[in-house]
Length: 336
Ligand code: SAH
Image (cartoon, rainbow, N blue to C red; front, side):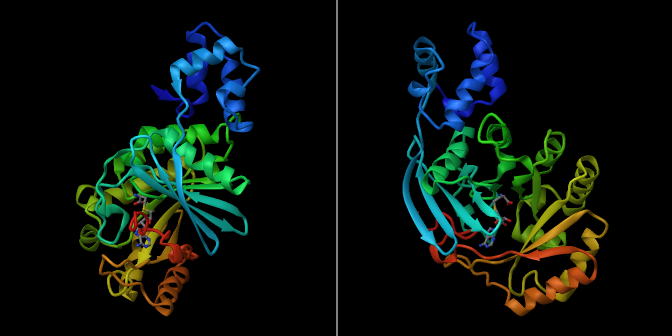
């Protein structure tokens, strides 16, 4: 049985028409679920009879919040799913609002060498409702709206393309949670068929690519996905994406000491990205006990940054969050 939080507005319009109802019932249902945040039984502008039918046709199961941990400027949440699997989400408090980092899969199959989250292989994809509910429950917890969403938690979103795009539609709907598409970012390790599909989607959702290396040799060592989709092909579709959508693309580059942080590699990166409408997010690596990589020293991150900037590549150094509650990138699940 499908979950009531798993359908887009259009899917509900179709559903209501199919059962001989008016399509505006979809808006009423959405308003109850996402604006008023009430249960089916309480949506009284829908008749009792129809509510009973809805309850027959859909599950209203909610994922269970097990643990909430607070750190400096960050909350970390552990949820249990209907089948007992566990996922995490991280909420960050910024001066411009709040952003949530949601998971898209239970585990991940991408096996990036530096990533703690990926040590648990993929168990299954998340349904859209399981991603939607991460947002609903955390908004309820903080009694405030979440302004930004990044699909950068556990999992590879383009390995769960349809559910992730359905999730985006549901939260983006003005009749629903209404999070602007410009405030939503999907991060991929570089699955080319996914990027190709994504550039044909409507809306202004942002795309980020986890790059982490300026050449194939190193990237393949760090990210096995690079064996399937080489850098030259990846940069080809990135260029296509930028020209087709007119959107700037983000590259994430974690700084690993003595691995990808030299002056030479910075210049190589400049060469790779020259002329692309992009910006590079340099991410101080979060060390974990189980993996040997070290974080690049601050001065060296700054030197790398300076090389990019002086060669006209937009760059930022990511503000750090959550390392005191193991909520930082790559550290999710370590203790769970
Ligand atoms: N699979 C997607 C989204 C999840 S990873 C992707 O690869 O983009 C989100 C980001 O966190 C990626 O850029 C990933 O490389 C980065 N990351 C993983 N482990 C990290 C760590 N220990 N420290 C900092 N960033 C890390």
